[in-house]
Length: 253
Image 1: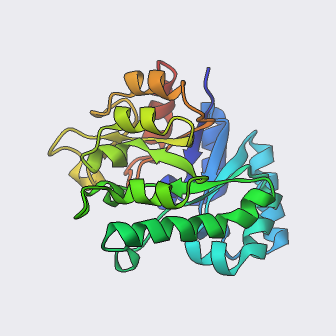
Image 2: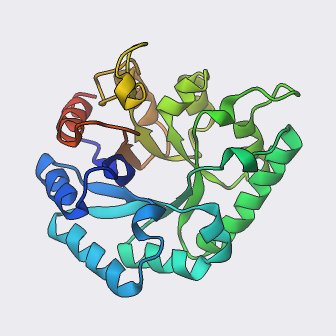
C-alpha cells in the first residue's frame, strides 16, 4: 500500500504540534510535510528537538515547503532545516498576488529564476520543485498557462501536484498528470466539497468526502514518478475528523 503523509499546515490552528504528531502516528500516517511557519526561524537545537519528536511518533519529514525568499537569500538556513529534519525534497509553494507576472514571458522568466534558486539544492542531492495553486492554470493572452511557462523556463523542476487546486483552476487533472508524469514527484491529496457545502471550511472536504475522483486519480498517479502522497485541507474545523477520515478513504484507493 502507498504510504500517506500529512501537510502540517492543515493543523496550524490546532496546537501543539506534539499532539498532532501523536494523532498522526496513531492513525497510521508514515510522514509529514513541513512549512516555513514551523521551522523557518528555528536554530539547530530546536530543529533537532523537532526531529526527535517526529522520531518518537514513528514519523519522518521527507518533504518541506520553503518560501522563495529563504531559498534565494538564506540557503544555509534552508539546508540546515532540510538536513536536520531528514528531507529528500524541497518545494517552493506559492507566489503572492503582487509578485505574479502578467504574461507568458514573465512566467517563463519566473521558471528560470526558480530553477536557478533550486540548483544549489539539486547539487546537494535534493529534489527541488514547485507546488501549485489555481492561478497557474489561468489562460494567458498568448493562450498558454503560467504552469506551462514555469516548466518551460525550468525544465528540470520537479512538481508537487496539488490536484484539488488544479481542479479549482478549471484544468483537467488527468491531462496534466499524463503530460507531466515524469516531473510529478509528490502529490497533495485533498478534496473539494460539493458546491455550496462546507463554506465554513472554504469549500474543502476531507479526502473521500468530496467531489475529486481520487480512486481514478490514484490509478493514474501510481504510473508517474510520484513518491510522496500528502493529505492536505486548507481550513479544517475538526482536525481529528480530517486525520482519521482521510486515511481511511485513502486506504481504499
